[in-house]
Image 1: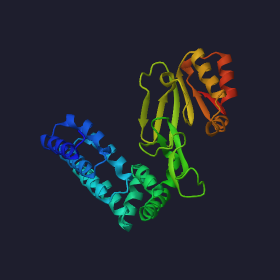
Image 2: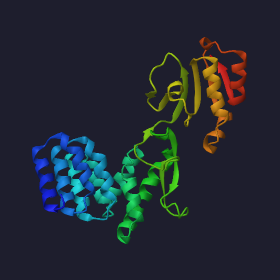
Image 3: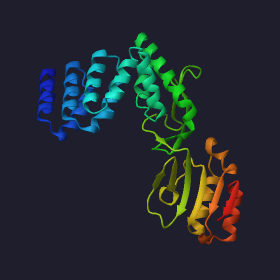
Image 4: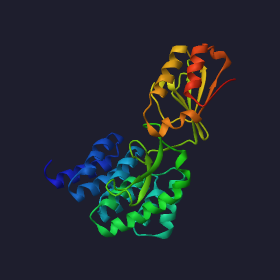
Length: 287
């Protein structure tokens, strides 16, 4: 409806009804141009209490609107995100304890604050930009020693330092996927193994700080640290090796010759396939 009062009343009514089916249409109204409508949306989403609203609510925190920030944080508290809401709201007031909390959360892999802070830093509000930079600096200092264990779930790519402003490579930096630049969501895995095993039907298997990835299902390269060949045909192994040899990704190509490849004795690979593996990876062992 063109009348903001009608849209607001509809959002308020959906919040009172409390049906989870209303969450998706309410989320779309977070982009409404009228502040009172967006306020009603935040209240309704908080009242309904469905966790699927958490990420969309966090995504609108980039807007330089203090009233909207307050309403979003109130809704997040109702959705069980009191720690994040308190830390983010406090950080925008340059509260020392809140900034430390954001850093602690980031070090544990919660980087949800990064995207809205990046937008606020680039925004027109100078005070918010200054405060956002301070928060980004705290988060960067907290995650920098752990950056090698952060992984983008979409690309299975490592995180690296990236400029907050692409046009200013000497300005503030943040940690994000080296391919897409996103900081959230994030997985933590210090070691990633590319596995070739026809008996394994799952694509991923996390084990503490280790992530095993089934290349036979994925069929594309990703940032892995070692290779395990348990049960695979010569054809599949050679196809994998050719992918690696033809890889042009500068982050990965320099690592292959230092990489270990373990081949199971039960794999039964041909001598030619073993020669290809030895010419592809730094160390190939049969165990």
